[in-house]
Length: 491
Image 1 (tube, rainbow, N blue to C red):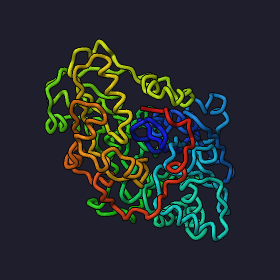
Image 2: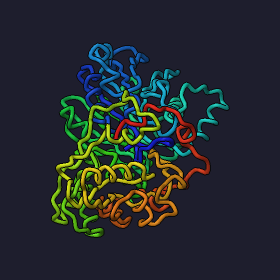
Image 3: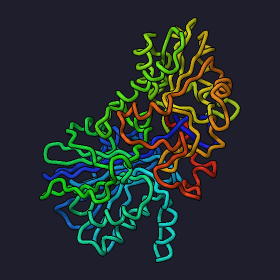
Image 4: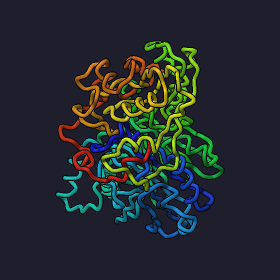
């Protein structure tokens, strides 16, 4: 589901997706990166891009193409044909900081005294403003409003005093605070870096004589690559033709201090992905089972709000014995170009994207599973749609705890005053959304859901793995009614 300050949508955006590839045999990688980005489209639908270079050609020549829209909207066969190179990086973007404009699309390409860099970034830095000001006072001129450009500049500057590109990446990362998964292409190397807390996922794959670094394993499956391993939180990996995979773990923290974003398992990642050795699908099944154990209710049907609610709904059904069924039909063809209804008919926006199967719910007590409630506006409308379709009761179960705090690490959870759970009881929320009952996943269940892996729970309990910023670092996106085109990208 989507979230925007002036929008009726009540949910979360993904962050971004990164994909890098190095073919040692010299084959072009652009078309493969395209399919990898296609598999990561769920992580961002605002913009996308690919940058490639020839490792056997002259240093400094990078061919780039990027634009606003979905992967299959931006790239054509003719476009991909022009992207010649056996080393490249790709990116799909949803902005959590910085406006949604073509200038802010990634990958970013830098030409500097030591050569070239192409960079793709997923995450959010909490000290980006400070780092940016430092660069500006030493003469840097920025072309974008995104924190990714700050990272690229620092890598370029550190390269002047480093023996290698990977050393420059590590030294730059030591200045960064917050969440990042990076893929960087230097003239002869593919480099990946993950923040020490491991907020964002990153993994390594291999296909024939080429290596891949990407956000999720589903992208590896799509291109027929084998999974090699996850990049460790705090690790910098370097892939070269001569050395294969080289690792620098000097920034890694003790495992108990890591803090993965739990929403990768609840919502962001595709269910067929594995993150840090754990199946996303299995995690969602567990969440549903826990909901059935902790918030049981008599009903005739369990159904999920597509897509992220489906696996949790199946888990609830498996644990409770109540039949699982499809109650919603999702229109998968509504993309960025959808013309939104006017303010006076906003409720039809939900129904254009989602419709109820009347035959499935009429005369039944329905348990509706969703991944989260942010403001409550969409939940209210979906509950009403079920009732209008003939459901006699609607019981809502949420496969995450209530949102009580904002996120500063790449998830667009707004300020506390805009959250429906802030200063309200569960009974009050239940009344607002019009449900017969409401149950959330208990916060203590989160660790069980991810088999004990260290996770960040800051948006639920206000305890962050690092001190949050004292200023809002998330940019104009949260302050102005801009970028209207992203209101209805996904549910």
